[in-house]
Structures are given as structure tokens and as C-alpha cells.
Length: 475
View 1 (cartoon, one colour):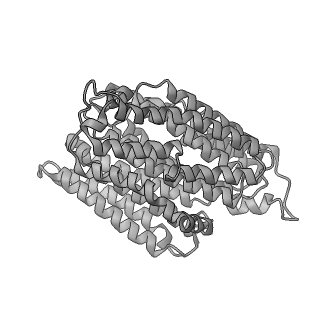
View 2 (spheres, rainbow, N blue to C red; view 1 turned 135 degrees about the vertical axis):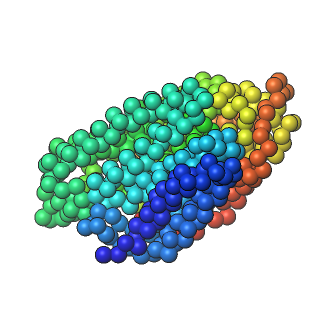
């Protein structure tokens, strides 16, 4: 048995434990240990990336077909670790503020990411649940990490209670699948219920109900409506850097895990696409209309993320390689935009009370950040030729090819509605006078990341075909 496939997860998890151990022995002796732990975490991420690239093209199935590593999982893990590295890079200011618990913060980020990586490679519902819970337990603690904020404690408690409910639903679904099929292995389930297999059995109603429960729990994890109720409060209450992690690494790994589940378990999903369409339409509606009435910038971005997930879930409803590739591309672009837009929140001194109106006149006080944020807002709205437009275009094209024209039109209409509040932000920054000038921290590393995020959105048009071809080949 080769353990090379799981070395990236072991490296990241062990690295998190190593940082915690170093903190125990040296944290009190060295005043600057928070800075050392920050550098250590970046080094561990770099080592993990090296291990992932070493195993990129190989397909390995280990632990009695419970864990799989292939081109798609390696690609997803590489993106997740790269996003984690960027989050850690821009977290230095926050780490400085919470020096006493900086090691715990960095370790939780790494453990949550390793859980997401296990989730992506799961080929069995037991490993799937293990990865999901390893990530979820870390996320609950991260949400409540800001001890000086009442909102943070409230966010952590809400997330924990609702997360436990989702985990219970997931476990109940898995138990039903096992009870009526006798297995929880993805390959074994596919062999049992593959629609093109002459010896396959008709899928029992109880097993299908179990799958629906599992998918429902995953809808909660990716904050799709109507399972989104935790998202605005948790995003608002958590520290800005934690929210950035939620919107990038956590969401990317959860969506990729759901896509792998749907693409690996070929069991004849006839009729279940209606569930995805319903959830997609609800997510688009909640995201589009919910954000219009938000005055807090964090809550606006939270509702915006629900709308984005609506597009991704609509792509999943097609159940085809082309639509799945479009979903992965959409998540890549969304993560890129989120790194910039949520990263901007880490610059704001009073980020908890950042209102949309406080962005007024930003172009006059900080033209560079106003330009970067404008590009990100235009891209999020789907304005061509930015990356956000093409991410929506590929989803719409894929679902039209699969006969979902009416839903494609509805999605476009919701996209037009959501453009209102994105363009309103640009209007505030460039055409309104600054009432109370926004106080921004002078973190050059964060500003550089935001600017690079905006520039990539501008130039990604030149790399669309190679990127989409690569993603399609991974599937």
C-alpha cells in the first residue's frame, strides 16, 4: 500500500500540531514567536504544495478504496493550499493583534484545510464524514476566535448549533444508504446502482432518500438557500480574515467535494436534478434580493456569496462533465474575487461596523484600492471582459446545452438584479463625496494581494481556453 497519496494531508495536519507544540515550549519565552509561527505556517504550506505537485498525474486508491488521489483531487488540493497560503500571508496584521492565540489561529486554518483536502479525496462516506467534521470543528472555533467581540461569540455559537444539525442530517443519510445497500463505498455503490450496468439493481427509495439527506447537508455547508440562514450572521460576526477563509478555502473545498460526489457516484440521478434546480433558484433569489437591503458591507458580501452558489448549484443540475468543469471554473474565479473583496475588509480598522455608505469617496482618499475594488465588483457583477463574466457564461452555456433554457434565462435576470448593488458600490466610491473618510490599515502585503487579484480578473481572458481544457481533462 502506498501512502504517498495522503502525504499532503499528513504534512499540513502535522505542521499544525508542530506549531502548537512550539507555542507550548517557546511561546512565552520568545516575544516575537507570533511572527515565527506565521513564517512556519507559510513554510509548511509550501512543503505541502511540493508534495501535491509530486503526485499530480498519478491515480492512487488506498485504504481499501476509501481514499483516492488523481489529477482532479490534486488540482483541487493545490488550489486549496494556495488559497490558504494567501490567507495566511494577509493575516499578519490580525496575527499581531492576537499574539497570545496566534498559534491556535494558524493551526486551525491548517487543520480546516487538511480536513477539506481529505473531503475532496474521499471515496467512502466514512472518510467523507471524517474530512467534513475535521474541517467543520475547526471552522466553529475560528468563527468564535475574536474574544473581544460579542458578535464573534454569537457567530461561533450559531454556526456550531446549525452545523451540528447538518452533521446529524448527513449521518442519518449515510446510515440509510448503508442500511439498505450494505456499503458506503462510492465504487461499490456505483457498481450496485449504475444505470448502464445490466446487472445493476433498481435504486431503493430509502437509498435515494439517504442521498438527498447527504446532499442537503452539503447544501448547508456551501450555504445554499434555504440552508443559508447561518451565513450572514457568521460572516458579519467573524473576524475579517476568518470570513476570507470561509469564503475561499472552506467554500471551495466543500463545493469540490460535492462535485466529486456527484461525478463519482454514477447511480442514475433521474429526477434529483429538480432538487438542484429548486435550490439554485432559491439561492439566486435570496442572494440577489437579500443583498439589496443590506447596509453592512460584510452582510452584503455574505448574501452575494449565496447568489454565487446558486449559479454553481444550477451548473450541478446538468450532471455532465462540461457543466461540472464550468462549476469548477466558477469556483476558481469566485475564490479569486473573494480573496480581493474579503481581503479588503482586513484593511478596515473598524471592519465590524463597515457600512456600504462608508465607502463613499474612496476614489479620492485611496484611488488604488478604489480601482482594485471596482474591478472586483465589476467582475462579480459579470461585466465583460472580466473573469466573472466568463464564469457565468460557461455555466449558462452548459445548462442551455442540457435543455435548461428557461432556468438559464431566470439566472441571467437574477444576475442583472444583483448587478445593481455591485455597481452601487462603484458609484459610491467614485461619484459620492466622502462623509467620514474610511480608515485603512497600512498593510502593504494585503494591498498587493488585492491589487493582484483585480489584475488577474482583468487578464484571465487570455488564458480561458487552456484553463478550461485543463479542468475538463481532470474530470
